[in-house]
Length: 186
Image (cartoon, rainbow, N blue to C red; front, side, top):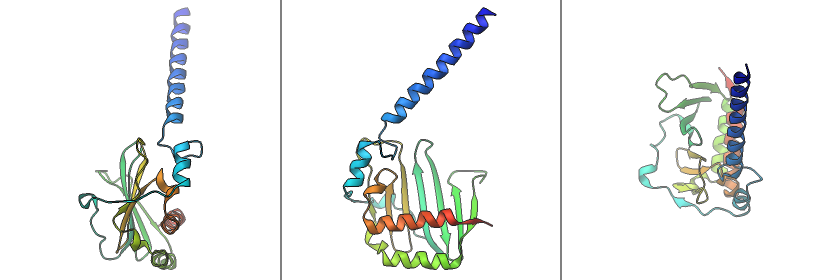
């Protein structure tokens, strides 16, 4: 019985130390976009200088009937998701490489909301950001990269650099996220 208690105590201590070590690692990483991280605060205070997206890294153009597309990749899991907004208000999200298509999500937003989003893209001059990437700070890891495409432009940013985006592009990102969050299941 004493041996069982000792094994149990050892396992509990090991689990605790593993968690504590993981929490220290999480808190000291530059990959999390939070207000505690000084590198993120610097990104928010300074606008990031964009760099051209290499041509071999540009996604394919949008198909007819597609208003907007987001490709998200990276993070801890390294998963790649594609979210596509169609003219009729359908919002499709799939995990690229998911052979079973088990993570597919099909939702809907009102067509009027799609029209408003298209107007916002024009008003905020989304074309101005074509083929530009707003990179993460050097040394950053485990961040998620977002590639946004309309019929006329593709731009890229990541969760760490989001606070340093130009105001007009930031407004597009905010409106896109609101649209995605407001979509209803079919």
